[in-house]
Image 1 (cartoon, helix red, strand yellow):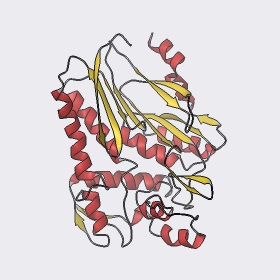
Image 2 (cartoon, one colour; image 1 turned 90 degrees about the horizontal axis):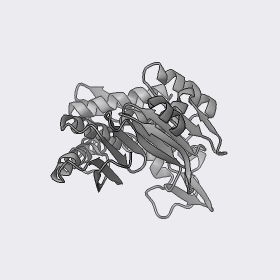
Image 3 (cartoon, helix red, strand yellow; image 1 turned 180 degrees about the vertical axis):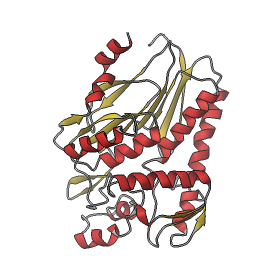
Image 4 (tube, helix red, strand yellow; image 1 turned 120 degrees about the vertical axis):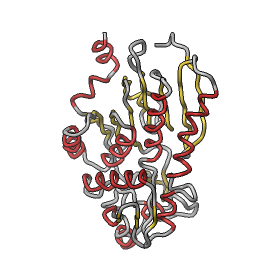
Length: 314
């Protein structure tokens, strides 16, 4: 696949480097069209952007706020997955993130169980009320869109590419979300799955018109008493998950991003059980690496591994 000619642009959005790779036959100004899609979503829906719909919901916690149809659609989807994971996935997790000191320079202690118990009453997506286009979260709650908004933007970007006639491309959104478009001349893109916190590749996967999403305990952590505590927190226990990595292949980047986050808080057995349940409604394959470095994976993941995939398409 190295014989094809491409051009690449990288811009910083959603607190990540977003890299778009398209055939060299397209003009540079078409990158502006593509990045405009991402910039619009960043501006309108990113909870970290002042004046976005999610920021307004947070700023008016306890009161109803009028939002657009897309915000409602995203909220209904995230609430459904929060229920599916019995609260182990929650977009109202921001008070817990703050408690652990991810936005402080002077955090020197692990939160007490009393502190956790108090904050965990706020980490509850079922308290998000939706009436038509009016949305209200409870007083003291705060939504964070980090587990889905970048991937949602990638899905919209891929739609725009298809509208423009682009059928051979790959997008790398900060390493946690990758999405591919393919045609008969270029039937797949290869994704290197790296070991969290180490040099070296764990797996080589091949994706075609799909997204690969990963959640991992890597460079985002707080260090307390010489021990690193990862940024992926379990909304049920209030503590960081002990797992090291989850990776999933899906048809939707947003779906994959939410699922990789929710699955991160599962045991290996729980991961496989949840994946079987998800597979009844969505095509998905993936793996979990636990705290010891051991892998569990769905049976169908082998199809996407380098040697198997090449045999399948040949």
